[in-house]
Length: 112
Image 1 (spheres, helix red, strand yellow):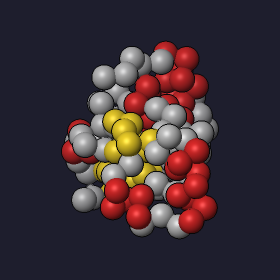
Image 2 (cartoon, one colour):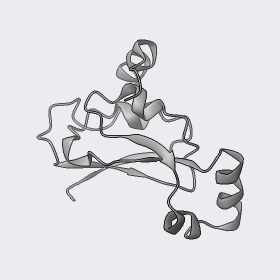
Image 3 (cartoon, helix red, strand yellow):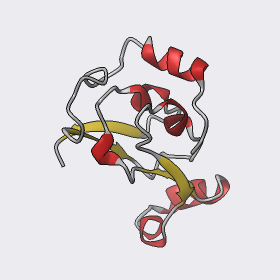
């Protein structure tokens, strides 16, 4: 598990465009979605998520194959790292990941 970053958490908590329900939603009613064509695997989502929803790892071959040519090049430049949400069921829609992501690669969606 990556250590939490208090400065990033504070900045994300105070962001005026923070979506979601500020961690008041029942787990699993919202799910984070990662746009792999934008994600550069910088781990900001991991560092701010209070519920350990995210991991950053090498992009899976099927996900890489689904990218367009420019997105593939971008992925290669960034070490083929991307965020995944293995614990998406734990999401409580705090929205910290959305505003912390420097590439604007994360959105929150209701339901499964």
